Length: 141
Ligand code: IDP
Ligand code: MG
Image (cartoon, rainbow, N blue to C red; front, top):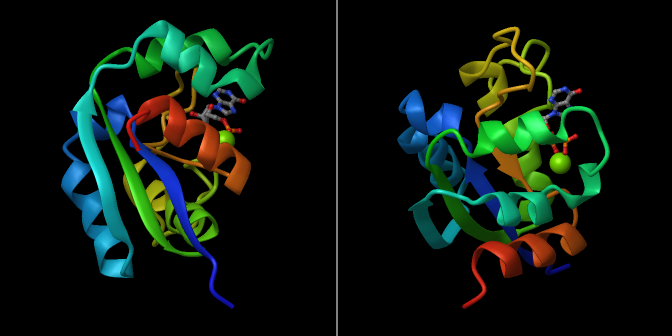
């Protein structure tokens, strides 16, 4: 059954700083997904507080926002059949130490012992999150 979706992907500041933008985009394209929008930008506090609204009140939310403001990010809208689930699978689990080898986080991220988990990428986790996040980052779409 056709279920063409769009998802929001971010290459986080650690991924940009460590030169992994090309590798993340390569994996998305190699999988066969389509880039719909792509932008290098610096996210402000208000955008990030909205983006991470589901984590409001958690102890790591301010360190997370500070980390996400520590440098530019690459924001992308990616399209394809079941891409929300598919990109989460490419990304791997949240904790990079145990993320499976072969995934973006498993291959490119590690635990640096900092306040926040730096794991190279973000991907929307549901159709509702994807719609909300795409509207936030790319209001023109
Ligand atoms: P996800 O990115 O795999 O969907 P979420 O639970 O939505 O993971 O958390 C958002 C981001 O917050 C993670 O990618 C990671 O950077 C950070 N994070 C999540 N849990 C923790 C934690 O327990 N300590 C520090 N940072 C965390
Ligand atoms: Mg999440």
